[in-house]
Length: 357
Image 1 (cartoon, rainbow, N blue to C red):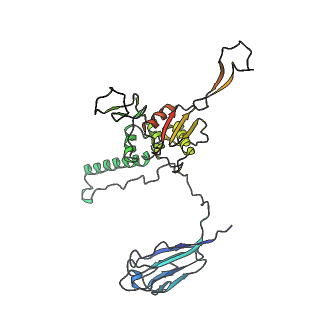
Image 2: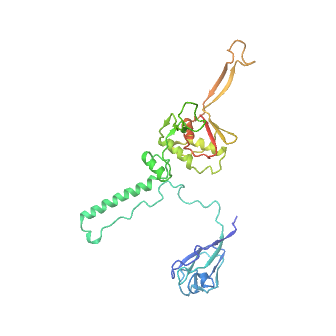
Image 3: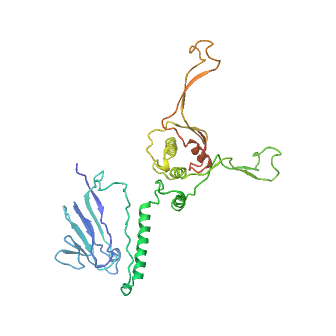
């Protein structure tokens, strides 16, 4: 099914350099119009002047066999079915004009391009422009050797920067001090230390019992357990804070997918999240969120229950259960709890979060 034509503006609306032709339309087109304003004020030039249009080659700054002059206030109609390039020119730099063309809308989905996406390798230039020796020094072997070493070292640096992929912190090549440099320099985040909770201040009224703290004395009690953040955990935290694939609307689905990605995304990668069964999220008014990460399922299979097992065969209140571990147990549940309670994972500020893992 053919797509309906749409109106597209020309690629330029003024002449960048006077006397130099520019292309503003490309075929195939269903038609188009180029208009030269009537007033010098609208042309943005001292005196109103002629605009030149050519459908065969680059437009000249004068009338020729193929270059057509468009007087101030006049228009040039691009014929329907034209498949070439429309070129325009004018004598003065900055000469303004208007142009539009009607063309078939681009097909959806777009025509696949050659190669893979995202690119499998560097997409920047890989070779430097080598430094060279001035003519009068080209017979000096020492200077030639120095420039050769300089070019070799510059090429090594260029290749490293092109292939390392500094913003892509999820790869194994970004680790240790380099990860700290990338996190702080590109993403503005420093490596945190995880703990079992936040600092607690003693001093304000109702924060301590009688005779436990002197009058007008303030004391800060820090968490009892502090964990050094490994590269793997640091990358998971960065992905939590900077991942955009879930959108910007906070809801239970957004939260559960983010938690699951933290638990199973090694080195901060973003694997496909097809289920979040091990994560339970409960909301309580006015702004409490309770997160529970299940490390398994326990089912009651029997016990001292009425009509289940004969009398005197089991002790009173005894239950028989069966525990089933999930296929991929959340090994990082404890780390997630520390990260959430330490405040290093970004959450809407109005919620109070508790985690059971």
